[in-house]
Amino acid sequence: MSGPLDHEGQTQVDQRAHKGDRERETTLDGWPIESVESQAWLDCCRRAKEDQGLNFLAHLTAVHHIDRNEMELVAYVYRVESEERIGNWRRVLRTSISDAIGTQIESVASVWPTAEWHEREVWDMFGIQFIGNPDLRRILMEEDFEAHPLRKDFEDRKPNLGVTRETLAKDAGQNEPSRQGSSS
Image 1 (cartoon, rainbow, N blue to C red):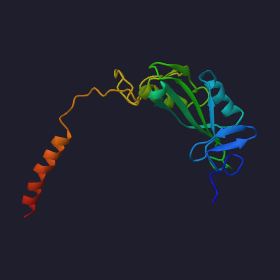
Image 2 (cartoon, rainbow, N blue to C red):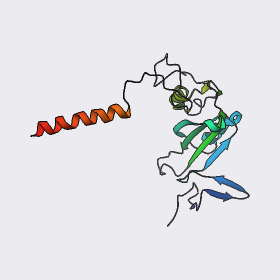
Image 3 (cartoon, helix red, strand yellow):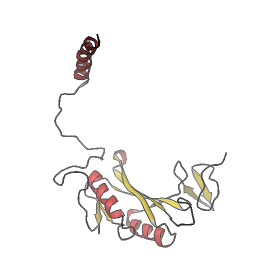
Image 4 (tube, rainbow, N blue to C red):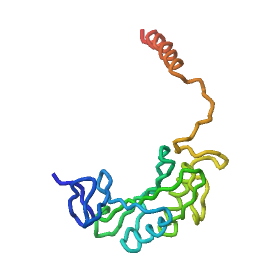
């Protein structure tokens, strides 16, 4: 049984493939991961597109590691060419930054124009500001919403509408006899 293939068509046996003296980390499904310092984020993305031909940004998101006080910014990129299957050349790019709301990092919208939308969503949901994004504003939440709901420290401030385990159980008990009565 063979495992996932890397961009050279070689089977990756485990989660870390050795390349020379350097270990290369991969995702569970075999995507090579390139981790960089936050100051090198824009340059890393630019190199991925220009030098490696990774011309399609499939997804850019963040992961909040509240226990480490950091956000991990993650981009999935491909090389898309008509004669090759999508995914023959692919990579996950990632960097870590502070989890403080409003932490800034360079936008990669100048590299992949679709990043403008991805970065808007990351700003909206996690509170990361992208320097140089031409239209950084909320995309999912209302403009006056004051929080970032995918952060692990997010506190939902909407009122409890009375739905509890007790009310659900009570409602289930009240509905049962009426269903029995209507079927006879």
